[in-house]
Length: 138
Image (tube, rainbow, N blue to C red; front, top):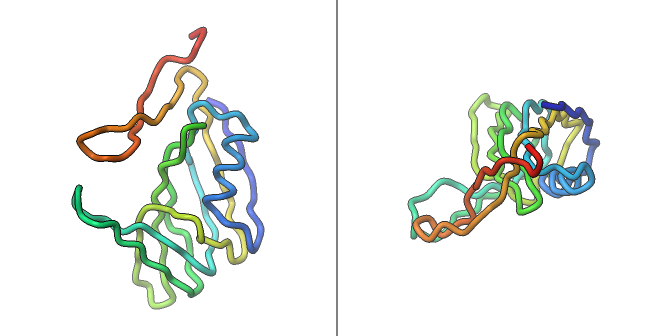
């Protein structure tokens, strides 16, 4: 596995930058190894049951990134984030565009050379779900 480190600067949209990095680094199977930093704004898709309408929540306050995990590939990203608020309470959900870096986001991405990730529609969930295949030439 190859590890890639990058610092995201204030004002950058976290999801947009993850997608840009995935393309720029030609990641066929990427994963988020670590991320520490803060956001000034967040937009999250909140958990719900299959078939229920999606619930999107927006937060406009300074928050610390306490967790960021997910998979990255050319077919799309699947990333969840955990955030702590000023009062110590935590929120989390599916990362959407609109999560804006406040001071920094120190990101470490893993590149898995022996596999390729793809996203294929799963009729049971209605979402494009992860499919893992051996990398060409492996």
